[in-house]
Length: 441
Ligand code: GLU
Image (cartoon, rainbow, N blue to C red; front, top):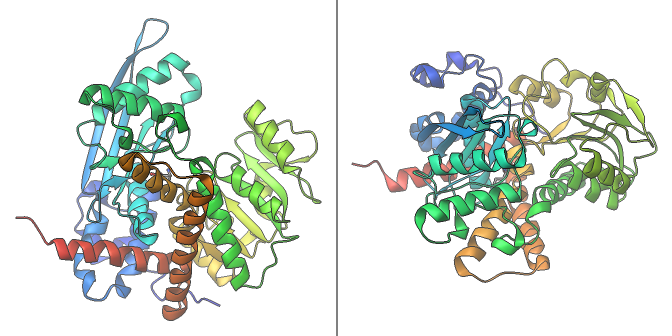
């Protein structure tokens, strides 16, 4: 079994390098960004001579904050705050999603962009890392307001995005319609249709087959690989899923098709449970129609906090960051946690899970299937030649399995967690590119 990293107790504010950071980059409880900085501190001892470039990882290359004013349907004017952060572009253009959520902050987008850098390097797609977001609850907007906000945001970040510069994609509360508006807005401003400026587009607009299911399929693929390593049988395994959208819903479906039992699902509508296994197709239909798991008849309702106590072999957090913390990590019954979400586990919780011998498949590999098929979409757009779904899925599975096998080996070699192992692989690739390119001027 893997052992805890010897550097796991390093407090962020004791790191000499981190203390020289500008104040807005410091970790002092900056939530996800603070967690990311701790993850970087843990990997530095394994970087060899590349450690001299490690400060690169602690500073986003470029941060853009934009004002997004729009006319509301009632005639008033509202201003939204938007962000695009390019964390690193050493290995290629920035790449990462755009999130619309009422809790979006700059520091959250910074962390999400940094995790994209590590993720893209870990699966070896030729991208840096970026992320964007608008602080808004999109459910409060009409379709017209949503379109105007998306278009104005795209126009504002248009100065730094582009098919060879930075390529947005869907994330929490954004979808293929929003990608179509982003593509159109950028193209109108450029005077030429540029399908490669965003991925996750509709199929009829340069989108790729298999993209919608890709993140969930990647979660399933690495989950099956890891289960094999720890002798866990998927058939009959009990699974608890947090978030039943594009990631958790697809992963839940694939695991149940493989014979696992999805016993608990939690989303913003509540928590449902069925010891003998939920009817996943019926639940997916219910969520598509009703917007959440609330009101699903064939299950028992649990108080939200009891989700963490559910008897299961596999836990899949597939919602938002900072869900598994020191406060609930001791209660988790699973043998394996597969991070469909970005940043769901804090470093303190990571240590608790590791001490309890619960294997964590970290976000930076577990949910990399989405961006991997985004890469395929971008390649198809550039070549204007489109692949069939079998080819896409086969290539996705091959990339995920190869990346996971390499990371597993690094974890064994250094006796570190899979998160630190993924950071070792990803950070070495990023910093090696940085070193080869050198500093300009
Ligand atoms: N938002 C997804 C992620 O967090 C996908 C990003 C992309 O396809 O560029 O990985």
